[in-house]
Length: 127
Image (tube, rainbow, N blue to C red):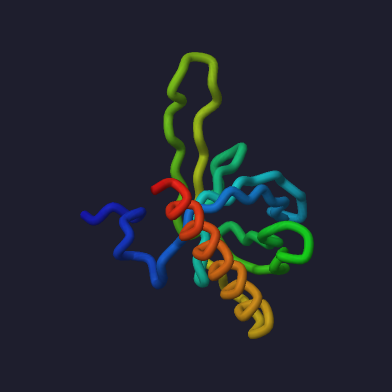
């Protein structure tokens, strides 16, 4: 059986990103951290496990760079054991975007391109 988190299930490349966001889940705002972002979805770190199929509504990014609201649903969910005694478990969910308007898709593409540019500059600065 293939691991549901393996990259071959993704429809597009995802980038590691440092965004914090507020997601609407069951009508309640919950803080999350975006771990990976791509044009078709994202992986988020949450404070609790999310059930498969849970609808999610998010704004990704901050300020003028923010894209949204993007609507999606939980496609994968995992709870990773804490690395140290007393730490909470690491809950992660793969969210596939189910509705992205054309202007949002273009804005998301610009955001991803900007992330790639910054990453390229950062890796050049390191060498």
